[in-house]
Image 1 (tube, rainbow, N blue to C red):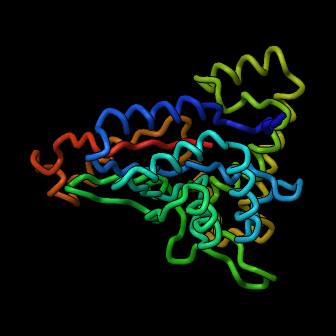
Image 2 (cartoon, one colour):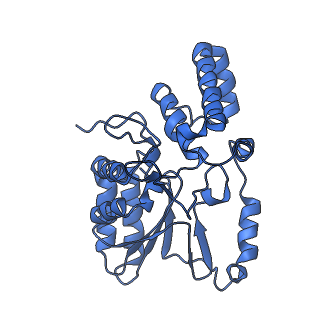
Length: 281
């Protein structure tokens, strides 16, 4: 019997398999389908390495994490293998903030081995026929990966991911909280849950708020502890930008302004041979 981690967020392997089978059967063998996996496909920030949850993520640790995810989601990856086995079908993988470890070549090879076919990886965005696809984390200071310097090598035995503040928050603080209350990031609106916790789970709520305050204090004033190199002002600025439900309307408008070809009705016609999914295992 396979036991899932209490931190597991994705339990829809069979539904995903049916989803891919439906589109493959609908368009038949003569139609090539490109599956766009738009970031956070693997939640690598919440996978422990040898029993330890850490933000110091190496390539070897990421390889082990991807191997564990593949083993734990046999139906999901079997569906991808069957999809790739059909002539003309292919997969595009856009890296998000929760699966930034896929910037390493090692985990990419493991993923390609699991799906049985080459995968085209994109670090930021993917454009085709006037359509612009990106995960969106690069539009937020909290979650933006420094793609010019994605790895930290100085004074370390091996390189680690240069994670943004938001990713360190998930790997260090949120994971610890979810081990005690796995639903904490799933109840919406969050403000209502926070009020409920203060009324009915007061001791835990106060303890958790104090842990959050300590984490913010540590990351702002004692940055070397978490390998954060930005200045205090920049860090406070990122924290001030934090919202539970950010709006990306203005960002989408900016992308369209920067890419006028995407406004061409002919180039942005609905293309049913492209299917996009995100937030997977």
